[in-house]
Length: 459
Image (cartoon, rainbow, N blue to C red; front, top):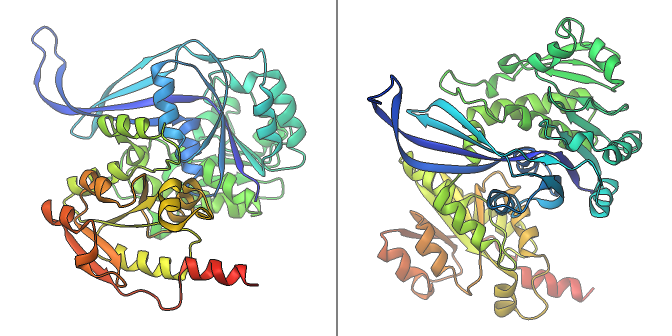
């Protein structure tokens, strides 16, 4: 399958979390004692990361500079998304929310970067032409005004699905866009009667369909044949405590684009997107993708090493511990994923509240299995594993054993297949030292990657 290509403007989003227990002596404003800072990719970067939850390969075409914030963004994105940069004029935009007791008090924005309109690099045009579907996540910082980009998108819209998530300061969707996904305020800013007559938006934009998102009420869809409201399914309803809707629109657009990439009709893709966005908000919204600043720095440094492919494993570990939960981990090469692996992962996940999979890097697999392995790169193996519902995060390690990564991750339970004896495990000492538990689970007979490779070679 061809990749989903996301086009749009990226930001660095920062949540400064703290405690506010007193007022400033010279003004009636709260003093926030910051206890932690959490980083994540924002804008089209968030949309791309969310798209990677719904489809196997995601490419992000975006304007990136060379400053520290841009390097941080690249480190947050590259483990899961292929980056194709275009020139940025000015500094990377950063948005910092100051929060206390779960509430945002103020947001501080910095950076004036605008995507250059002078050129569209050849690599970016090749990425667009190689797409199976395109999601335009416009955040009003200039990329959708690039004349050559618009020419290419207009040409491609007649052949492949293009989903356009508009912005009040951005350019209008190109003619022939398969689906435009404004929220209610964006829609009514363009056409005041959009909620009563969404077809007016569809006609204005010459689009195949328009889906106006209306928060917890789902979406209003006009595909040229009918107008329907698609409601949030009962099982995905958001509780009253889930108030942070940051990123819900990105999750909606990304899921809709992934559905169209898979060949769904527009109504079915919107229905899947409504459910995905509701579940995303219920799970904590964009904050669930944040990485604590110290951990993010470690991940960014690690991402410069070859064969690195990691999700937000350490952020998952932090959140599980903060909630009083139980973190489970398992590890291995996971080359040529087979039913035996799936059985192991399902059993492991049952021992706790989240499962992190520690995967041998490509060089580590070669040391263990020989020069003909791995069959799949660490990046591809990580993507396959994170596509499984039982896996919460993946982290890749360079050593021949996971001892060093376990020292950092410190799962409550370390799970291995029953073909090992506990005394033989090199990681036994480190797990016992920090007070963890080792569990050996039965393996599914008849499955081995080495055996499968040998059998295939004999055919």
